[in-house]
Length: 417
Image (cartoon, rainbow, N blue to C red):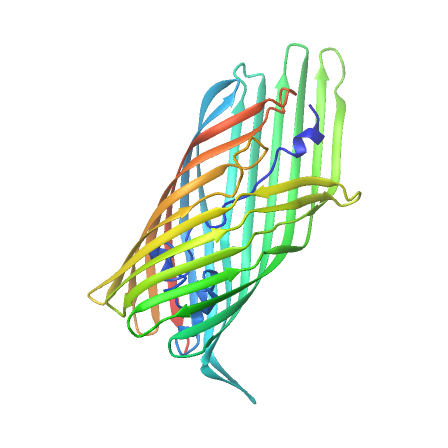
C-alpha cells in the first residue's frame, strides 16, 4: 500500500439539492418554478421577483437543526453493520429584494425587480469506519463539504401576466478530508494518513419566465447554464510508515502535492405548473432535469497531469406541493425527490444517495414580518464502492444501506419599508 494510491480514494460529489430553500417553498417541497415569489426563489426561477412586494424586503431562511441516521452494510471480507448519526446546522438562504429604483438621476419603474441572494445548496459532513473481518486492517474517512452560491437577479414584468428574469451566479466550494489506514500482521505494522483540502470558485447564468394570468393558472420555466470553475486550488499531504519486528520505524512513502481543483455542474431545466387562489389555496408541481457531465476535476498544479476525472449521470427530480389557509394562516405540505448524479459503476466515488422526502410548514404573519416554521423528513437508499487499499489488493468494497434525515426549517420575511 502507498499514500499515492490512497489519494484517489477520498472523493466526494453530493446531490444537487438536498432540501428546499426560500420562504413558502420550504413547506411545498421545492415546487417553486411557477409559484414561487421573491428573490429567495431565484434559486428555482429568476423571474420569481417580478411579482415581489413593492418595497424593500429581506428574507432569512435556514435549517435550524439537521439530523441524519444512516445504517450501512459494508462488504470488507465479511458483511458488517456500521450505523452512524450526525447533527449539523445548515444555513439555507439570505436575500434582499426591492422593486423599482430611485437613486438620484437613476430611476426604474415598479415593473423592475432587483435582488441578491446567498444560497447554501448543501453543507455536508460524512464519516465512515470500516474494519476487516480479522481486525487486521482499519480504514477511517472523515470529510466536510460546503457549497455556497450568490445570485444577483434582475426581473421585469413584460405585461401584467408575464415576467422574465436573469441571475448571475457565483459559487464557492470548500472540501476537506482526512483518511487513515492501519494494517498489521505478526511481522509488521503500517499506517498511512492522507489530508486533502480543496477550494474552488465557479460561475454560471440562469434565465427564467413566469406566466401568471388572473385566472389562477401559473406556469414557469427556467434554464441554468453550466456552472463552470473560474479557478481552484488545494493540496494533498500524506505520510505512510512501517514498523517491522526488530527494525526501527522507517518512512515508506510521502506525498506533498499542490492540486488544481475544479467544481462544475451541468445544465438544469426547471418546468413548473400551478393553480392558485390568493389567500385560499394553491397546488404546484415541478420537474427538474440535469444533464450528464464529465470533466477533469483535479490536476497536479506543478506537472499539469490529470489526477481525477468526474462523471455525473443525468438526473430527473420532481416536487409537488399544496397550500391552504386556515384562520388567515398558511398551511403547506409537499413531496420531493433528490436523486444522486454519482454513477453506480464500481468506481471510487462518494455515496450514491437517492432520497424521497416530505415537508410540512405553517406561517405566522404580522404587519411587518412573516415567519414560517416547518419540518422536512426524508429517507434514502445509500450505495457506494471503493477499493480495499488497506490490504493492498485493491479489491472492490461494496457499501449499501438506508439514510434517514430530519430537518427543522424556518424562514422570516421582513419588510423594511
